[in-house]
Length: 182
Ligand code: PRP
Ligand code: MN
Ligand code: MG
Image: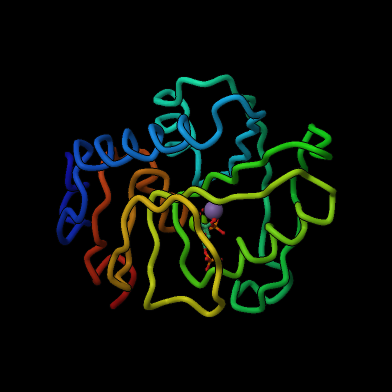
């Protein structure tokens, strides 16, 4: 059951590895935001697991809000043009915003999101992500808290989907090519 009936090729990161690394990031966040305001902004839907697990390890006071974004038009996200499906409910003027993501792939989503949020007059905007694919980067982006740099492979689990499936897996695995027609 854990390998979804042969859909997975291999496990890249176990639940235990993710948990241990997020604990380190949370300790760093505790340190760096202590005595300051902190608003976590999760990017639906992939960031749900990271938000739930990272936030529960942070010991300083914080608030949470959510955005949902989607690439615009053509269906390919490589344009970097993003549409807001659900905006924040919070006015972030003067706030310390920490964007929470599951993965940075091309970087286009976050690059757009960061400048969008910066235009609203926050005190600061930083980024925390469980995964990053350095080889897939199409745009340079400063990321303050990175769980793991991973190879440019098709990964699912821990919030990451393929056609909306596999998000619930507690680990990160690579998808077998037969699943996506490879
Ligand atoms: C995925 C992932 C990131 C983004 C990264 O979201 O969760 O948000 O793509 O890709 P990029 O760095 O190339 O922009 P997706 O748009 O698939 O939506 P989802 O979170 O609902 O799965
Ligand atoms: Mn996403
Ligand atoms: Mg997705």
